[in-house]
Length: 211
Image (cartoon, rainbow, N blue to C red; front, side):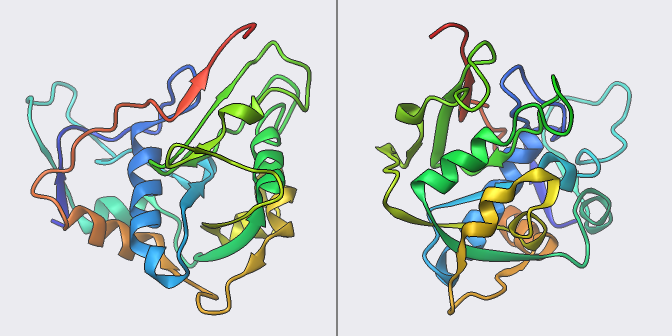
């Protein structure tokens, strides 16, 4: 066992595209790598999350904490894929968020999972390229400025433009953190910080209509 969580972590997103598994893994990445380059946020594609944790829950699980084993995490997370801390502008970060929509096909969305300090709103009825409200994009409560540089941690897959997120390739690797670790190690370390990891409240991404 590598840790305990207040309940099962699922890849199933809410209406805004956020999932409990995505939140916990993004937090594990951000917390585990912030000393490797001073990052302020971490993002992970939902395609990088392969199974729920635990991956095969009982049909009628008993209420209370669930145990996460190393084998569970090995199934759920990408292997042989590194993470990297990059510096990119607020404009590029917002551009990456816009690339979530109609991706990979019109009407389909690939919503990035984000760490606890990053928040924003998006409107599915807004025109393409304007679905994310720029004024709503904040990091630790402070609005993101288009011309300011921010350090974020992502996978090398995303940095190379994986899943259509081309804006991340504009980011510059932080020399002190060329490769910041592996998903599995960071998740295990994060779970080990808590007696029981609380379930996320799914309030980082907000889906609005006509706002």
